[in-house]
Amino acid sequence: MDERKPLLLDVEGLTVSFATDHGRVRAVRDVSFSLREGEILSIVGESGSGKSVTLLSLLGLHDRKTTQVDGNVTFRGRRLLEMSAGDLRKIRGKEIGLISQDPMTALTPVYTIGWQIAEQIRTHEGISARAARKRAVELLGEVGLSNPGEAVDRYPHQLSGGMRQRAVIAMALSCNPALLVADEPTTALDVTVQAQVLDLLLRLRKAFGSAIILITHDMGVVSEVADRVAVMYAGRIVERGETEDVFATPLHPYSWGLMSSIPPLTGPRLSRLRSIPGMPPTPDSIGEGCGFAPRCAFTRPACLERPPIRRKGSQSALCVLEDPERSACRDSVLAMEEPA
Image (cartoon, helix red, strand yellow):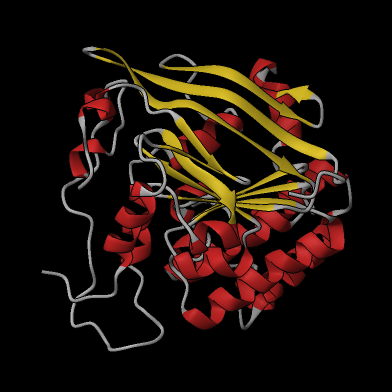
C-alpha cells in the first residue's frame, strides 16, 4: 500500500445481521479494510462467504427493516452508514459505481439500456439528453459491444447475458467514479471480452485515479490486476496482504486450498485438480471459533476459540498455526501431486 496516496475508503468493524424466524443471524463479522486512491483490492472466497453482502452494505443497498449494519464506513471523510437514503443516492453512481453480479436484476426491463445509462449521466452531471446518449454509445463501444449505435436502443431482454453484463459495466463507468465496486464483473464474459473489460478498468484507474474493489473467483484475474488481496470465509476476512505476498506465501489454510485448486503452469498435467472437502457453513451455524475448522486438515482444540491474528510483514491471517509448523503444513497442501 502506498501510504502517500490519500485514504479513500475506511471500513472498521463492519458487522451485518439479518432478521430470521430464529432471531438475528450474522452474515458478516467484524470486517475491516481500507482503500487508497488508485488502489485495486480484490476480495476472494467461495459463494456464501459474505463478499457481496459486505459491498452492498457499504452502499446502503440493504433492507433497513430486516438488516442491521454495525461498524464505521468512511468515504472521503463522510460516514456512509449514518447517511440518509437520499444522500446515499447522490453518491452512488457518481462517486461510487457498482457493477452488479446479476445484470438482469440491475437493469429495468421496460427501458432501453441506452436510456438507463443516459439517465444516470444526466442525473449526476446535468448534461443534455443528446450529449448523454452520445456518451452512452461511446461507453457501450468501450466495453466491447460490436455495434453500440444499435445496441443503445435495445431492451435488456434483447441482449445476451454477456451483453447485459457489459451494459451494466458501461453504466458503472459512466460518471468516472472515484471508487468502483465490481461484483464478479467478468463472470458471464468470454476470455477476449474479459481482457477488454479488465483493460478498461485499469485505464479508468490511470486516467482518473479511481480505486476498485473487485470480487472475483478467478485467481488469474486477481494476480493480474489487484494490488492487495483479502481472502474471505464464513463472514470474516481470514487473510489479507499484498497480492504478490499472498500468492507466494499464503498464511491461512483456506488460502492454501484456493491456491491448490489452480491448474499448474509447469510440470506434469494433473488429471484432476484438488478441491477443498466439505461445504461452506451457513451463517447460523458459525460459532466464535474458526469458521474453516470443520474443513481444515490441521484443526485442533484451540480452533474452537476466536482465532488470533498472525502477522508476517504486511500480511496477516486469522489462524492458530505459527511457523515453522505453518510452513510445513502449507508445503504439504501445495505440493503438486495427484489428489487421492
